[in-house]
Image 1 (cartoon, rainbow, N blue to C red):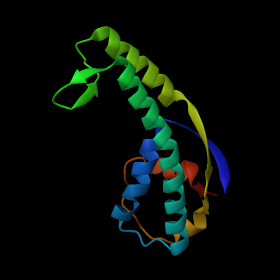
Image 2: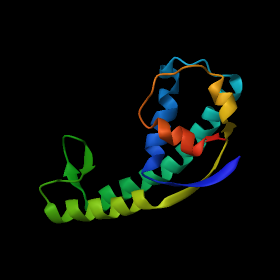
Image 3: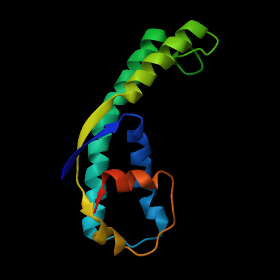
Image 4: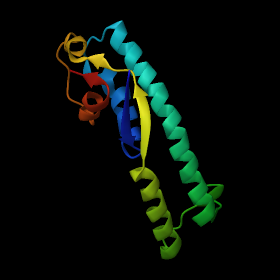
Length: 130
């Protein structure tokens, strides 16, 4: 386990990277699969807070949208759209501390060759330790 700070903007990208791991055709050990699953759960918890902030901002700056059956940010309303982008950008730039379940690089290397995937670097930055 290792506590690390991660920007809120990186959270959904790392979740997607973890979700993409099975598509790499590598053969992951149970230890690795457990670590990926644990980290996915921890990141989901952070993502809930990010999503709650986004929904609150939509409630604050959005207008009723009959097509979507709720509120939405109208890009034509430049002032509201700009405020939403500014405040949501602030949320995404904030950092969250996550106690990552890390694994040694040697364990990861045993998985064999794998196809590269989007945001692969985030897996190595936060989950794999040397």
